[in-house]
Amino acid sequence: MLQRDFIEKRVHTLFMLVALFSITMLFLIMLFLFVEAIPLLKHVSIKDFIFGNYWYPTDDPADFGVFPLIAASLFVTVLSGLIAIPLGIMTAIYLAEIAPKRTAEIIKPVVELMASMPSVVIGFFGMVVVAPFIQKLFSIPIGLNLFNASLMLAFMSIPTICTISEDALFNVPLSLKEASFALGATHFETLAGVTIPASLSGICTGVILGMSRAIGETMVVLMVAGGAAVVPSSIFDPVRPMPANIAAEMAEAPFGSNHYHALFAIGLVLFVFTFIFNLVADHISYKFRQTGEASL
Amino acid sequence: MKKRKFLQNISFFVFRLSALINGTALAIIVWFMLSRGISAISWEFLTKAPFDSMTKGGIFPCIVGTAAFCMVVLIVALPIGVASAIYLNEYAAQGKVVRIIRLGINNLAGVPSIVFGLFGLAFFCIVLNMGVSIAAGGLTLTIMTLPVIIGTSEEALKSVPDTYREASLGLGATKWQTIYRVVLPAAFPGIITGAILSLSRAAGETAPIMYTGAVFFTPTLPGSLFDEVMALPYHIYVLATAGTNIEATRHLQYGTALVLIALVFGMNIGAIILRMRIRKKMRI
Image (tube, rainbow over all chains, first blue to last red; front, side, top):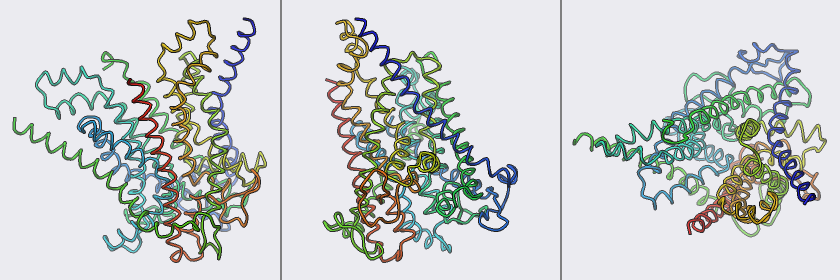
């Protein structure tokens, strides 16, 4: 009996330690980003780094202004959001409320397959198929640009938005909808007046996580965005979002150089963006989580 | 009354349309890769190494490299992920600690893939002195896929009815005996589903391995965990952007992309079918 209890305690402690592994790794990621980014501060102030307009890391003297990169990241994220958010949410509504059960069972795996599509394949598709197409369609000089990248990113964030929203819509208690029907509302009125408001927190979480995925996505923007480190003036300008810049230059930045530290500093900025997105999403889903009909 | 019905018809049409747009987008991508890549696929393509500055030959070393990364992920991430899920679902009292652990896992899931690459480079390659290797790349992918495994394993554990646990505990088994003999076997198919999904994610990712494990070209197959390798996703990127003759190797690029899609979709469809079977069984 004693041995059993002894094992029991050991097992409990062991599992707890293992469970702490993820958070330890998250902590280590933050630590390493900071440690590798901080030496840059000796050469550039934070203000010049974030708001500097020129990114010439290999010139002498070098310029480490990442404003064009941050702007590019924000532009592609917002533009992809304009495409992905309506499509993702409307598909979720279709799946949760309108589609016959049979059809939904076919479309749900399709959305999952969209989510699993390797980013490098989407980037490749954007490069060889979409770029020449939109180049001809809009008669613009270059097909690798902000618009193309946003389209490809939208494809990647739709599944995230859709699955999380669908979950939220699906979990709205039936009695709420029935009450609405009983008052004479149509299916659409019930949807707009009851179901969607009741699942709004879940939908918001989905949207934020989808945007977080878009801003952090690397291969697509590396291959499709065009790569010019200037603040874009139209949606057909080539841009250079933060992840693309890190991926493109890491190979040529000598270990321990200012350039190397600057790339980690960009990584840190990117991490802060996604971290805030995730904290907000977590806060919304925790604070407004549905614990029954009474919580509405 | 008519107006209300009209409004509903219009909006439902738009909802249907958006679902259709998504499906069409997926179909278009797959169709392009299939129609242009299929001609490149041959037994030779799958089993030979590339030669003539990668303008000819096959992708065998890339398949081996991707398989090697997946093995590392399977061996390291699966036990850690399942153990974390067991702790969160079976042991932990729902309180502050669990809330923080979950927050950590959620945030880990949201870290951009290139940031994992940076971390892998600084930590595994340089601080732990692994260099650019299967081990360093595999461990970087492990951290990235961990949230997926934990999430799906937890789901699987949750789907085991409490009556199972109560019956076992009622017979005098300890908690660990219950988990080991009753809960885990019942949750096993679900956990396998999660493992397959996370492997497919690891197989398709490029950014985390770009600077930690994968290289343009290796003359020989890897001999140990500390060798650098070629990998399918990175190979597509290299051929499409930095090859010696990008236009001439187009069919090889499509072919490699097709192999990668087939691999990833195959795993995902397998997992989806497995999950459907489990759900059917649970209903009965």
